[in-house]
Amino acid sequence: MEELAKCCGSSAWVNNMLPFFPADDMVEILEDAEEQWWKCSEVDWKEAFAHHPKIGDVESLKKKFAATALWASGEQSGVNTASQQTIEALAEGNRDYEKKFGYIFIVCATGKSADEMLEILQSRLPNSPEDEIQIAADEQNKITKLRIEKLLE
Image (cartoon, rainbow, N blue to C red; front, side, top):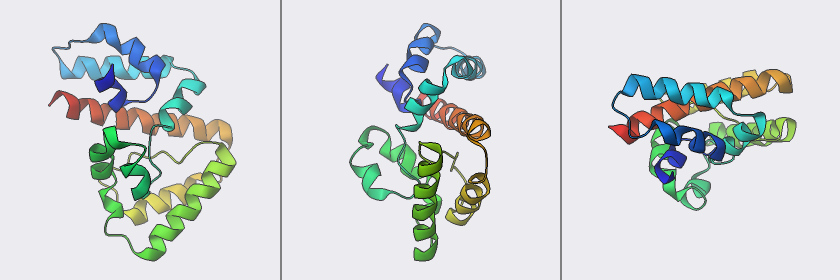
């Protein structure tokens, strides 16, 4: 349970995944993970979102998210070389996003620069809450699958 929770912070998803372990086939377990994710409720999705640090929030990485800090910092490594202006814009965008949608901005940050993440954040801010929760859930699904791969490597 502890290892699965590092992949996704939804307790419902973790519990739904337990019967699939131990796993012999990576492709099969990734398919199972996705299937179980989409069976979760919006409340479960938001629980998973709450287990992520905000993009670029180094202090949050260190304190609240120690169990997944190494993975999250690697996933967010594009922020490490960002300009101060970009970091400040990300922080402001995160605040605006959270105020509008009620949860933090979720993006599969692997391979993305801070400027790319900022552009994505700004492009998603105008979305309706109904559209955005689906987009955020899809991004969480991508993150979960990447973390399962890391876990099973």
